[in-house]
Amino acid sequence: MSQTTDLLALMPDELESFMKSIGEPAYRAGQLFSQMHRGISPDRMTNIGKATLEKMRAAGAHFYLPTVRRKLVSAIDGTVKYLFALEDGNCVESVLMKYNHGNTVCISSQVGCRMGCAFCASTIGGKVRDLLPSEILGQVIAAGADSGERISNIVMMGIGEPLDNYDNVIRFLHLVGAPGGLNIGYRHISLSTCGLADRILMLAKEDLPITLSISLHASDDATRSAIMPVNRKWNIDALLDACKRYYAATGRRISFEYTLIAGKNDSVKDAVALATLLNSRLRERGKDSVPIHVNLIPVNPVRETGFSATDRNSLLRFAQTLEKKGIRATVRRKLGSDINASCGQLRRAEEQKADGESDKN
Ligand code: SAH
Picture 1: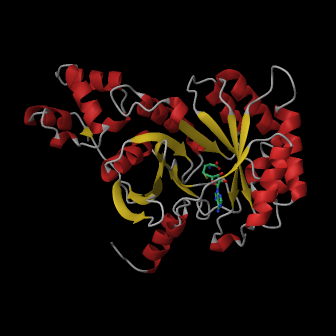
Picture 2: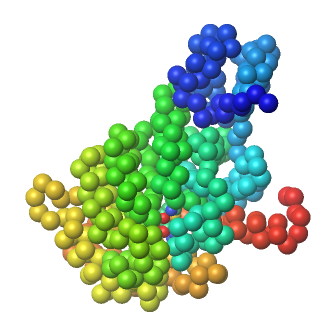
């Protein structure tokens, strides 16, 4: 069998080489690139003729977009949660959120996850596989095409650990930022990581000034290692050191996520410890001070984990304690609370359903 070429994985110059290799003019690549990235399959493009399509097919060209397997729309705020099916039948989740400053799509980077965070639904069945660059991009394209909305921001906070699928994520970032395609600016893209410090250092050298979001969730190694196994490999010290270097290389402020779990990490003492840690490691006076921001998120209870969310008062007290110590903190506005919009849970529910019965839609 001849080799297949995943058209959505190609950068404009690569698509141009492909088209030239089958005797087509270079401008065809531009037509293809912009339309494919708007969700139009080549065989539906009015400016690509049958003969061209035939030549592309013979040379192994392949186009696939994730298809909507399930879709939940929040009656409260219009948040849309997608369960997308990939070509091999695996599913991932994406969430489209509407803010005043534009539409944000939250996308997945892997099918499942192998990081093992104790509170997270995505990791329960382990990692099935990495997503291809075209599948990561495909979620953004498919969410935009399905909703008819322009996507202006991307957060990589869905299923999977993006830095554990490093090369594919980097290619995706180049694809989504490419002029002629979705052309989303790197300042409008956030990548969330559980803290693979070595990869953060690699990312710092890519010249892709995206916002780095660190899932910190605890301010001492014992607590963090108990809920996030990754901390046994890259402890808080190594992680914050990588953050400093990321800022030095990119000039981008670092965002920290802190999920509040009742009785585990949500006391005033914990807030003081967090502020002390961030202030002493990142915000010491002088030129090396790193601009930071903390996002507080009450843990979303997942049946299997047994953790429960902090109450409203503890949450506010935690935020105030941080602010008093000079740390900017926001309580994440909960979008789509009626559709369980945190990632990992819809895919799990679907898998359990598939295990119990052979239900196809
Ligand atoms: N692997 C990446 C990105 C995916 S998770 C990471 O760890 O950052 C996106 C965010 O949701 C992370 O901060 C993660 O810790 C958090 N999260 C996971 N499960 C959660 C839950 N049940 N409640 C609240 N936040 C959760």
